[in-house]
Image 1: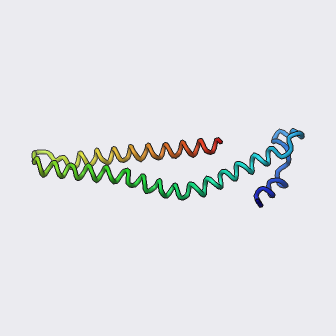
Image 2: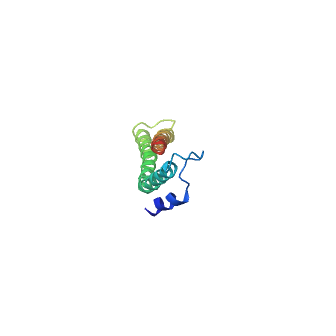
Amino acid sequence: RSFDAFWSCAVPDSTPGGEPGTTGRYSNRVAAQERRKLNAAHSHLWSGFGLFGLIGWSVAAPTALGGLLGLWIDRKHPGAHSWTLPLLVAGLTVGCATAWHWVAREQQAIHEEDEK
């Protein structure tokens, strides 16, 4: 509320072009945008921690599964070449692609929210 009171007296009641018949629209737009940003910052803080954990697990889980699968194949079917390292790298690649997808989707959602 104090922020709205600040803007109502600190910003002239006209658009940046100086049109006198548009009282309050500019200050109301700025105040609404600032409220959205403050609300988004508060809500995105916790979702950011959640996303950080999600990204970590989305990389770690496929990497570990690839490594474990490689070890299992190597023990069941020993051969000249090891499967552990290639499957570990494949799991890491899948995990990084998944993390990239999640980050891009969250960034798009934040961008769309800011446009509204």
